[in-house]
Amino acid sequence: MSIARRDWLFAMTGAVLVFLVVLPLAAMLFDLLRLGLPVLGWEFLLGEPENAGRAGGIFPLLVSTGWILLVCLAVSVPVGLGCAVFLSEWLPPQSTLSRGIGLSLDALSGVPSIIFGLFGYQVFAITLGMGFSILSGGLALACMVLPFIVRTSQQALSAVPDSYRQAARALSLSRTGMLWRVVLPSASPGIAAGVVLATGRALGETAVLIFTAGYVMRQPGSVLDSGRALAVHIYDLATNVTGGTGHGAATALVLLALILMATTGVRSGAGLWSRSMLEEKQQ
Amino acid sequence: MNGITQPAMDPVREESREQEAVTGSQSVAPGIRIDEVSVFYGQHCAIQKASLEVRPGQLMALVGPSGCGKTSLLHSINRLTDSVPGCRVSGETRVGNLSVNDPATALGELRTRIGMVFQQPNPFPLSVADNIRFPLREHGLRDRAELNRRVEKALRAVGLWDEVKDRLQKPALGLSGGQQQRLCLARALAMEPQVLLLDEPCSALDPIATETIEQLIRSLKGQYTVLMVTHNLAQARRIADSVTVCWVDEGCGCVVESGSREAIFVNSSHPVTRAYCSGEKG
Image 1 (cartoon, each protein chain N blue to C red):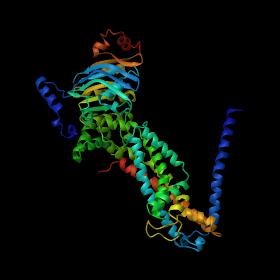
Image 2 (image 1 turned 30 degrees about the horizontal axis):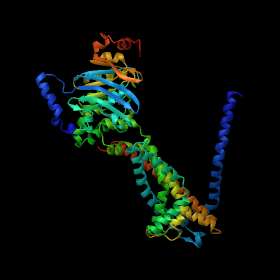
Image 3 (image 1 turned 120 degrees about the vertical axis):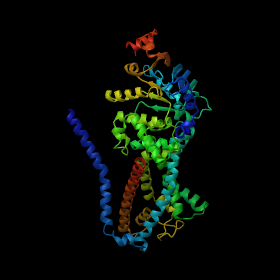
Image 4 (image 1 turned 180 degrees about the vertical axis):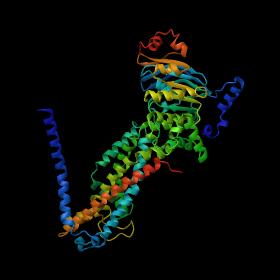
């Protein structure tokens, strides 16, 4: 076979594979648009659900989802980032402790989400007395996404060139000063990628939330109230409510849009922070 | 920290000033004395029983083939070897009256007294001015006017001021390799060290940038005691006052000979030195 022909064959195989990957996504999106688009509108976004979700809107669920995500990220980002910083900047990479923590993180990220749901139910809802609430749900989700945030942040931190740290040592700079001024801003786009991944998973999660945040459709008054997340709503409409398909598809479209928005928001926020830290702050 | 903000309080400088008054010498820099220093990484021996002495204000070139422990020896002087897992250093190193490996010696004090420039230019990913301002701020200098003055002084000392004065707020990583290396030198000089350790500062640069840096290093002699690792024998011959030749012996680095430039390049009787310096070996 000639070289040109071999290359052509390779390129064509690649193109077919790409098509196979895109096809299900396109089909799914087409289906969602076909079913959901007629329902979508301001009344849907701002209205209360009626008739078990067959009619009305999803506003209380949007509020619940927002709160759950906020609790989840408010806990998992600082804890995860702190853990990653400690692992990559303070602990020697070959130490037993570091390897042990790494191993348990990898094991945790492979645990099915239903386990985190049952764990969250037992610990947050029952033992700590938080009941079915936004708080229980957010905390259980935080446990689930923590390994992702730690691992991706750790990778982002270790991608910061060691020559910066060596220069800092030779200049006798404090590790904390170096961390704030150089290492974290340089790593922040990578850390943001981890947070984006976590946000996506948290927004799409149902199993954890059914056991912790509950599925009450009322708008939550505080984080101690139960609340239904969008993904739980989709699950419920698809499995328990006959005639809920249209509203389910519309909710799925809203959820997709939300994930896209959160992703862009986190990314650009990290980019802005990185630039403002690395560039001149005064004058 | 005192060394930066209140240089007059520094005991070593006081002592040197007294010496200066007695001898009339221009230099306030302390000498470096290395006595039987060995550096090990785990079981691997990087350099064994190295001894050399750099006189105050002089420039010594550390030459030799790759893997003969030159860089390890250099890194043991400001104890960068401390942060390498499994690295052990034995022997005695003194910078002026400061014993480097004495546990009582404060690492911060040692490192503010010793400036270092690495093989690859490694400015921080900050603006040009912040590369100098950030370390000074870290060491407690807060006054904005004084910070700006120190930035200008350091950049002038390395001949970079006229090239970058209009782009002080621009990212340092946008400078050329030679400019970045001079910025790194400026960053080290801004801390007002007395000793400079240069680890092949020109190896990543083109001949024109090398020439600039070389002239710069030459101008620093007298004011600072300089120990420079170089692969470039011609460079050592051009700018060094004294030369130490390292070699590899049975997988382990060692110092073959150490002496004045003439003693090494012209009058050496050591077969390894003669072969190396004449280009027959290495």
